[in-house]
Amino acid sequence: METRQDILACATDIYNYYGTKPDGEIQSREIKKSPTPRVEKSRQLYFETKSSASVEFPYWYTRRWEELEGEIPIIRRAEALKSGFSHLTPAIFPGELLAMRKAVYLRGSYPLPWLSEAFFLAKEDELYQEAQKSGKNSADEVTTMGQGGGNVTKSAGNVISIAGKFGLRKEEMPILLKTAKKWFNKSVDDIGHKYEQLVPGYQTKEEIMRAVICMFDSGYTLPQGREVMNYYYPLQFGIEGIKKICR
Image (cartoon, rainbow, N blue to C red; front, top):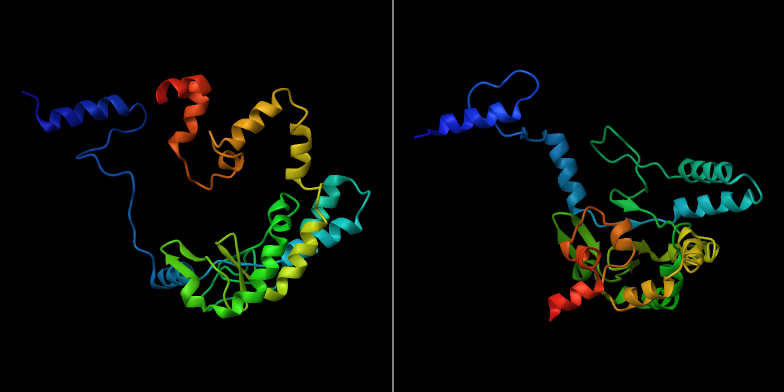
């Protein structure tokens, strides 16, 4: 009768093609370590911080992009990126050794209207309404906290909720909309959609998307680490195959 040691020996013989065969018991691949006090403090502070959006980078990116009308696209983009990064407001938080980030806020980011501006334009009236009523709520009432950080789910005080996730300062909202309008029919999303309509079978694809049979485009291109197996069913079985499963 085989013992546990015999089974382990057999397994290590199979999987150790290269290098020296390890001695003793098989160990976990992951070496778990505890963060230093300084790192743990910074980590917890990051978790507790609310997600904030800034218009600083897209404003300077768009401004420089427009100044270079007619320039070679790669140079134009490089100069726009340079302008955006060089105008970031520096912020060094207590205990930091590596300073600077995407925005002045600890857990900050910025919109990229040159990729897609449709959301901001579609929500223009709604954002203005949110700006008017945001002072009626307190930040504690409308902020959902979790281990991944605080999503600003509703507008409160001087902060407007963007897509139920990011908080945008009220005074930055007009420039966000102004910047987004400059990319109308020029963004990657808009140009891609124009050429997409030239592809044979586009109308069928559009009907499938409207029926929500499968995930929208960004569900594949911007998964952000998430994966839902149900999205694979339309690709694996096809529409007729899904019909058979439903029957």
